[in-house]
Image 1 (cartoon, helix red, strand yellow):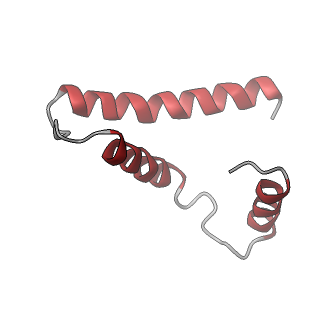
Image 2 (cartoon, rainbow, N blue to C red):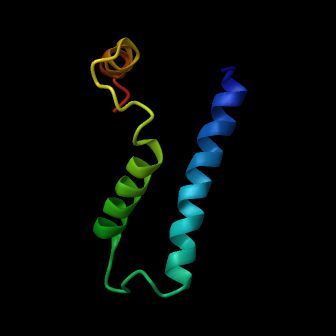
Image 3 (cartoon, helix red, strand yellow):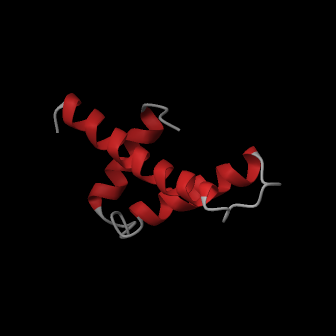
Length: 76
């Protein structure tokens, strides 16, 4: 992917997840007492659902290459 395509992909994915949670807040499905802690957990879980299965095989070369790059480039 080109850098432009990467930016578009990340932006669209993040917006989709954010929009679905914002809609749930608007619909009153998210408890009002939830603050940043619970909302961060919800975001984490929602993103996990979006990517689950994409890199399911943790033994694959692609996943190992991904982990190595994240570690070497300090991406987390």
